[in-house]
Image (cartoon, rainbow, N blue to C red; front, side, top):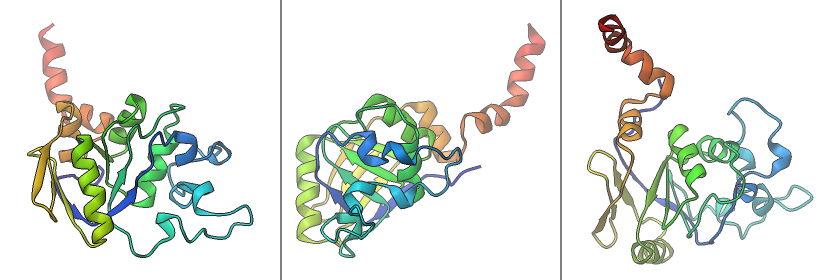
Length: 195
């Protein structure tokens, strides 16, 4: 059973870049591992560190001004290859939510399968959110999964977001696909017995 998802209120890490692909999220040279642990330290590796392994102070993950469980990203997040490791890196780093105006479909599903909630917002809401975070890095955002709303606490503006009902149920109850089947074992056996 994974961490249940209900309402998250958190400060945000702003990444106002469009077309961030999975190779930028987690470079291919780090895909050798087969467990999900340890990928967070290499999230956005080539943007966070120079070739000598020194932190690049201008990159947002190295800036102590910003932090929190919500990554706010530009349009078309997670494009490129279908590597699930990108979602592993985001989750392992500690992000529970990624907000963007558009996600690549496979990456969006990989996030959901790894208990990271991808929240699609309008471009206007996204622009205002970036504006609020840059004006005040302590700006909080509330993501309410049961109500499917995201609220910019700085402005009070909210938007409704869509999510597959099955994935919503899994996130709220902390169940992956196997856990979900096991939780419904009695119903499945009863159905089979009727046939």
